[in-house]
Length: 210
Ligand code: SF4
Image 1: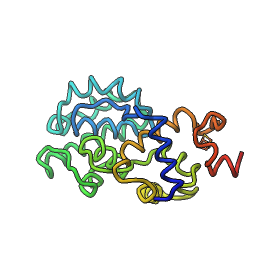
Image 2 (image 1 turned 90 degrees about the horizontal axis):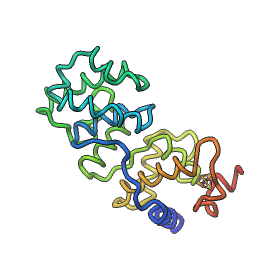
Image 3 (image 1 turned 180 degrees about the vertical axis):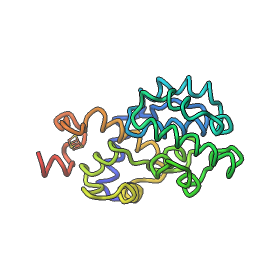
Image 4 (image 1 turned 180 degrees about the horizontal axis):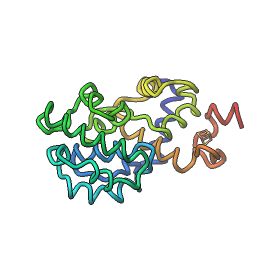
């Protein structure tokens, strides 16, 4: 790891020691469902409706037999709710038929499920199985580009690879939460608060653009 990346990693740990996943769930299946629902939506909106969804459909077996209209109604306040309802039922059916009702714990198996991309799969690996992963959402992507770890135009996979190569493996999970918190509070998409940012002395974006 370069000296610069070590400093970045340490600053994140210092400023965001309590950063955690902000979705609510109690097991791998709920984690997978909540993460799928959070696409293009904020976590608070997901947390408002998952308690009733989870009490109605307790596991993959129950959700695999759910009525599409009912699931759609349960989640209709979220963006892309029709696709999400469809995918939740289909992925539950596959979990039942291919994995004995248990959420798989490998990236390859997770991304083989309907509607599950590399970001959702990485969240499930990190949060449910404690497997070192570096989920890249919109905040992670923006902050990593601005800090010069990745560059504009990089795919999500490339940004994830660069992040993994740049930081200690045992820090990937906590670091991705810390980066998200930084992106939500300081390094905002439209108006980054650079003057109050702990990275202002070493930020590529601030040095080149502002
Ligand atoms: S200095 Fe500005 S652009 Fe750079 S990480 Fe901080 S808030 Fe983001």
